[in-house]
Length: 271
Image (cartoon, rainbow, N blue to C red; front, side, top):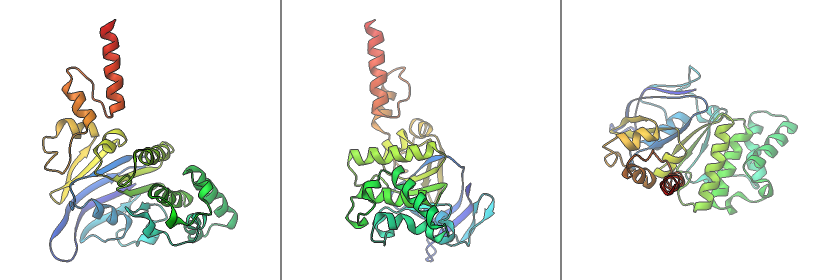
């Protein structure tokens, strides 16, 4: 679906940010993008969105070269949720904000009404349809940005640190929404420093380090087989550490899984 082919990038000062990056993102994947601060994670997503252009190499969509295509054109098939989503909102109400994309696509009024209604329902924002977006909390603003992508029938959403600054309830609600959208076939790519998110929700992890792709594989492979997690700006989630510390314990991607495994083991011991 999306591909970075031998992409190299800097910000015009000759200092490399990314060098010879090759990444293929297939339809329907749920991918986490990790790495230490300043490693180039956000730059990867900005290149995919068309907000930056590579110094060399190509960006492909369904096999077609879109390297010089601008962000407005790419927004037809890629949704982007900024770390501060209010920066991408400029209309007076939530429903008007969500309607903007479909209007730019040339949908009919009836199609726009249906798209907005369905997107607000999918993101749990129906009751906030007439609210002023800047007055919403962070989690709600992110859901408005996601609803905007859904209304455009986007097949891929990129999110930059979507759970930072959120309490546990908002984080769980957002991740449940993204999981549901992914189950319906939407491709999810999210930047995160939250190791629990990488372990519990992502089926594939990309790590940027040393100006290039330093890892590409499953969370289990990353957290159990890599000895350079700290060097890459990562750490092992508590659930994984606990499961690795208990002899013959299976890999556990969350505390919930670890607790269930321990209870099952203790129950079996008592028998």
